Image 1 (cartoon, rainbow, N blue to C red):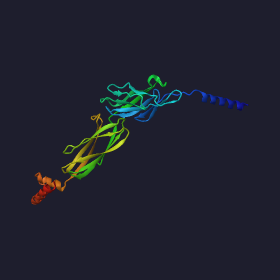
Image 2: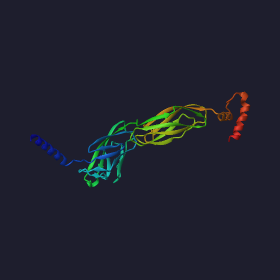
Image 3: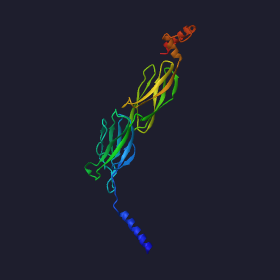
Length: 279
């Protein structure tokens, strides 16, 4: 009988646990800049961002009420508050399946970790969810991307276009626009603007052309368009532009002694032929 009594007591305890009202708390499903489930007064580290670089916090409108029932449009608005001085925020639009708040740190923000609040709101508390406030931390630093330029040395004919690969690994939370430019050439080259999404690595082709033979030390610069003075990286490469027959003819035409004097009459004729039939 003793054993039966013990077993009966255990069964009663288990039944009480199973039949007791279950406590459910509303949650917030963060979708961007990464996936994370937060509850009331949670603290979340968003990642790295450069001064002045806009980023977004996006959540799902879906959550659960106190009884555990899923509310597909439980959250109706995402509100940002408690921003550091000089920062700008735009709260989300209303009643969408996903809610995104836009945040722009001050372009003068110093390096360091900053905090602010994001709050998911059930407007009018129609679903009985109230609101869930989350503390968000973010690290402001210019070191929000990695740069790899290849090859480090390139050789091509003068007057012909070559390409280098510019790889941007965006380790920050901002979907950033970057300007790729070059210095060290005798003529001005193009500036190419590209976008690198946060948390991704992408390789871009950048064209190089020089009309004059020679060896050039070049600097490839990649700068954030929103914070060009702080968020940037440089890479050095060497370009060897090889002389061609056309270059040599042009050099003669410009009065440069490109060949020994005994050959000048012959090459002058060749230059004239090139000028007549090459255009």
